[in-house]
Image (cartoon, rainbow, N blue to C red):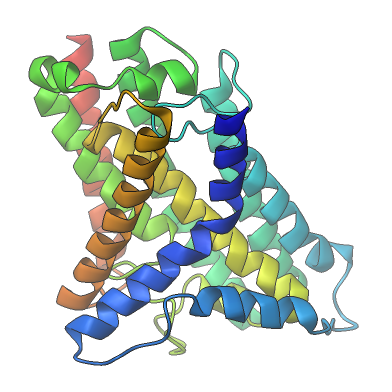
Length: 302
């Protein structure tokens, strides 16, 4: 019961902290003090206290977009194991539902942008779905590889099967998966070098351009869903990179929290040391990630 409670508390409260750690890391590299570590929480609290403004040209799709996106992401978070603990929902084949829940959230974000009738937001939606078509195969192939290695079709069996012993026998395939999934984390969460969440330049905006018309609680739900998506994909990634197992339950949760914070620091370091790619380079990098994942699949099925 305690593990379930900790799982829910971390799932609800930790995602905005990851954005705070990334921002503080980037500020430290730039020699600035930066915003407070808890600034994302203050921003969300301020947005949820405001009212939302909806254009008369939009339909119910625009209003439903943030709600469905957040609901789908929350459901996906219930499927992902954290540390060495089972998730709240688990069954054979849940790995397929996991991917499609993330895709459902993206779909409603893009159709909400298209519902505004703005060519500007339509441009961002077109870019978003194009790049997602290149990123999703990496996740699917990674699930196939891990399913092959673990002999399971459930996320619990797939992710908790990863261990240091598995790295000794299938290290080459796992290295390629780790590199490919790190590219996907940066791309799916709109991070540099694939995207810049702080940009407002028309020629470079991808995700941010789709949410320009959202305000108040609707915009808050989109921001929180984005932070939760980073938390989910980060937990997935850490099961491969750091398959650490600690005997005590509380110690294992502490290792998981520290690993997530270190991942956020690593993302901040990458964003501080690299420039944003030109748009024509983004598909090339995502295709490279797909190729790495495909080679990993070839190694485990040969």
